[in-house]
Length: 102
Image (cartoon, rainbow, N blue to C red; front, side, top):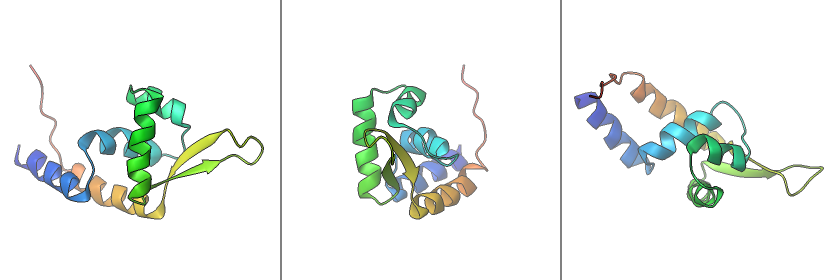
């Protein structure tokens, strides 16, 4: 339990919620994603994901990239700072114990 508390404290210090880290960062660390696909993956509405993406973009952790051929098509990518933060937080979460639920 102590490890979990430390991990939550580190996430709060980074300005990220556990939700943002686990769902968005873990997915985007694997490569770019379309907002609609990421919203489905996170089980949130596209509008909710837009708000979350805006917050990450303001922190300089995420960038929206428009496709060259179809400017309506957008993909989300972690910035270099986003990848560094993901790597830093991953080192902390690797030590977490799985706590079974009843």
